[in-house]
Image (cartoon, rainbow, N blue to C red):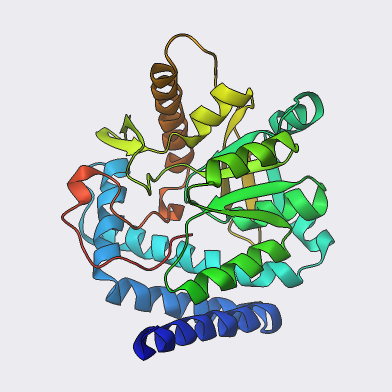
Length: 310
């Protein structure tokens, strides 16, 4: 590895370790102050990401969103993204009672029914929104259920290793996105683990074409393929930051999944249903949507990306 890449990796991981120490040991007002400053700096310097956030907000609020109103909403998105990291840094050292007291889950009965009656674990299909790691800690530490999550590999590799250790410390079975991911996800579901799939971005570029916020794009086929092949439920889910020091989860009713024709057609139909559900979840808190990479063909002209998403 070239020295410059190794140095960049060490600096990045060092910054995350510093943030983790701040989250664990600093008083919350100090931690939130540093988080807010980091969010303002990120918004000012991450031009490409800022442009994508603006585009996404206009998709939700309409093309007329501009001026001070747009500026406030963009800053709120970067504030939310910074809080995502701050809360993540704190979770490994939180007492189980604190995790339980910091989350309310609406629609938990859909998850409980799947875990009580199904032969395979359900898929929680989530957008890049709010703070899903808090829900992960609640699932594993409070409810005692197994949890698997598919994550993309980050650059630099040292950062991916750091996040791998962090998420495993929460009791999550981490499955890196790759050639064997589908087989490992199916095995996790058969072991009655809940499977978390971030479903609002087609990382591999070989997903299913859908209409999403009024534009054609592709979304990952994984949730639909899993459900059609294993019979597991797809539960559209989001975890929202509240105004206090905690989160609120929302588990929507399971999608209607059944074989009606060719597998390809069924996957397309179910994925479109999921796109509609993801829109519903995102519209409840657009400024907490942390998707900051090009996600539609019209976004491809943007550049300057590469910082890992939540």
